[in-house]
Image (cartoon, rainbow, N blue to C red):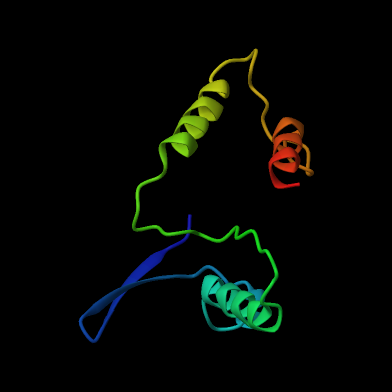
Length: 107
């Protein structure tokens, strides 16, 4: 249990704990990751206009999830509810069946 102190600064309420801050936080660069990824992708595309890039970014979060993706998510999550179909964490290379299907679709 850590003691928590509430402190108000300029009408904002902050919760202050006595937990030591991880020193590695100070090493993090300012900025948000996704804009930096977009900047690098755009720079690469400007130098390589014929490049085909598969974006694994966050996508357009203002739109609903497409039904075929939602169906797959529900099916995958449902498999985790049974001992017979539960897989836990997969291999670090990913799910073999998904990798094979991706290769067939992409190549």
